[in-house]
Amino acid sequence: MNPDREQPGADVAGRLLASHREFLSFLERRVGDRALAEDLLQDAFVRFLEKGHELRDDESARAWFYRVLRNAITDRFRRQQTATRRLEQLAKDLEEEHGEAARELDRTACACIAGLLDNLPEEQARILRRVELEGTRVADYAKEAGITENNAGVRAFRARRALRAEVTRACGTCAEHGCLDCSCGGS
Image (cartoon, rainbow, N blue to C red):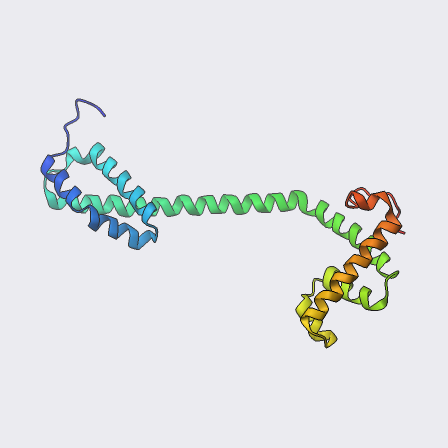
């Protein structure tokens, strides 16, 4: 702090500090977070120490201080919105950058697995097509098939185990590495 600068009047500072709870309550009601309200209030008191030397009477100091608090809230929400927009843009950019590669991998893996499903018993192939490839929930499949959800879960587990064995048989060592660089030809 500049030593030439006159310090705020002790009486004005004392009155503002005496209203600490009132100011904190004001902030907390608006931001909904006690810790954030305390941080904003502390920053406002620092601002008072920097700029408060211009204030002389208690009423103008309180009005000025409330204005500082409102501005602090507004600035905080603007920074938060800016950060949210930046994160959303980053997610969009990453999706555009990596999304097509991920979709291609999904299409390749699904094509390989869809071909191997034909080697399974019809009931197992049907549940895996619906649940794994089409994204149907097990509970919804159970309703469609007229079976209990537990029964559908057991059938899906057994079908996955059978498919895993079929992938290992058809793909050999490719299956051990997750089929990400498959050279088996999808037989």
